[in-house]
Amino acid sequence: MSARTSARSRSTRLGAAALLAATIALCLTACTATPAASSATHGVTIDAGLVYSSPKGTDLKLDACTPKGATKPTPAVVLLHGGGFTEGDRASGGMRALCEYFADNGLAAFSLDYRLGAGNGYPAPLEDVDAAITWIRDEQHAARFNIRPTSIGILGSSAGAILAQTVATSGSGSLEKGTRVKAAVSLSGVSLMTEDALTLGSPTPQAAALILAYLGCPSPAADVCPQAAEASPELSVDSSDPPMILVNGSHELVPVEQATSMAKALKATGVPVQLSIQNGSKHGVQLLGPDTRKRIIQFFTARLS
Image (cartoon, rainbow, N blue to C red; front, side, top):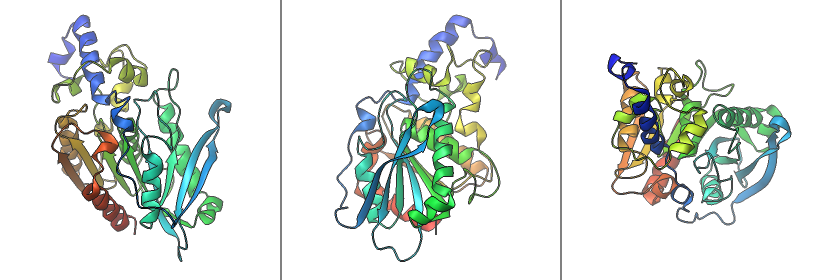
């Protein structure tokens, strides 16, 4: 942390916390908006409500959408819903349509529930995503769904985009095993959650309670919230990370500077990154217009081949 940041008063830090938190995007309506309906009607098999993990006795479920009649194992993409870490699920807010859309385009998709609400902040949702990837990679499940366990990607919207970026920048070594992924897409994702994030654009204070609840901190200041840095994907970027697409609105709930800063960090380490800034205030899955969806399918098909 810089000397300037360290010298801030306690009251300034608490005010800053409210500003930082807005970058998570409250999105109790925005991040659950439904994108254009997919064309999937007859070529997709849906296995819904499969339990992949039971932390503390609570069953977490996923929906598997797989292409019918695939003659060889297909790549797989993990889908993570938004909702500010307080609401949303694997099937609502356009996630079912997106799951079917991927399968209709030759990619297996697994849309997850993860732990939400009080007491389930960082790192609980991340642990759930890791558990799901491990479950999908299991030899028995890979065979059941006819997927290549070495070819897994991840896509997240809003809160889910934070998780997608975090998974993509966690660990090192092979992208074909463990909980690593070979490609990632972030729709309105927050990359930096420390006090320094306050300098990225002009965040507003509406979502303070959500981001601080996720971090489990009264403030993002380093002396009271060391996990703010640990939870920030941008600070974990290294050259072993997978290629990414970062999509953001130019004037939406997540400041566009979050995306541009993350893109800069990825480029600095040699990680391939595509930055897509769309004019307007659309957020999360709202950004998935026809051209963007097509581009994402092409990206995953190429990177997971």
